[in-house]
Amino acid sequence: MRNIYSIYKEHYKALLSLGLPIVIGQIGVIVLGFADTLMIGHHSTIELGAASFVNNVFNLVIIFSTGFSYGLTPIVGGLYGTHQYAPAGQALRNSLLANLLVALLLTIAMTVLYFNVENLGQPEELIPLIKPYYLVLLASLVFVMLFNGFKQFTDGITDTKTAMWILLGGNVLNIIGNYILIYGKLGLPEMGLLGAGISTLLSRIVMVIVFVIIFMRSPRFLRFKLGFYRLGWSKAIFGRLNSLGWPIAFQMGMETASFSLS
Image 1 (cartoon, helix red, strand yellow):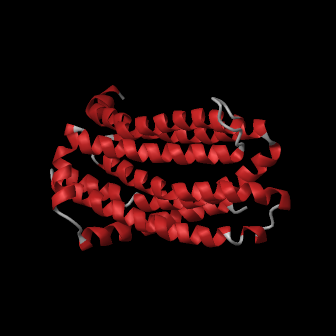
Image 2 (cartoon, helix red, strand yellow):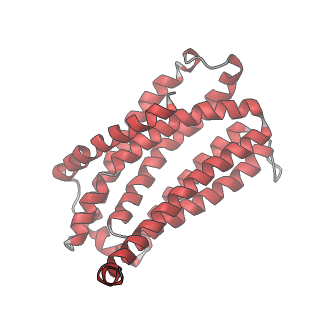
Image 3 (cartoon, one colour):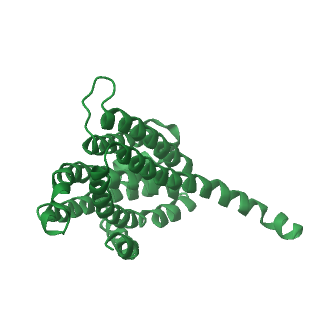
């Protein structure tokens, strides 16, 4: 056993170094959902019912879109492993466009669902709470996809800690925003469920802005920025992103649908 450990010790260290930040970031997302549910439930039981419905619907969409963004990681990983840093930056540029287009497509689909929300069998007293919360989360969908693009890029170049810290920081910001907006602190009006949605939207916008600033200003991304700016768009990369991303998206979407829709 010791001999095996000594042989593969560096591989174990690499796996832990890369994997633990991803695990911590995902735990942070779960904790965030728990905190949202807890804080909304303390404010109003009827708001908790509305939040549960909307969150289940959007969890399906977000996990579907996250699956699509996974297509970037093997592309960037392969380019990074062969020291093709400029093409890796070009892949990020194409991924952001692909993610944006998928976000717009999903936004259109979710808008159609919004206009039919009264036909989904929810109690009538929940509809006035569902609709504004639904619209705020709908507005945040584009920012989720843009963040996913940057996250899968940094994961592909073995920098999993950057996304972890941004996720954790966004979660803290969201929880603070929930407390202020749900309960009406610091002189702001008590907004209840809508306040939780606004806090989520703002935190997602801030996370994307922080990722953009880090990518633009950090010296470690300089070699990737050359390709991001100068190599332009690539039909080959764009096509590969779609060929890899859509199967993962549908697989993850179907797995989630079995729980969310029920």
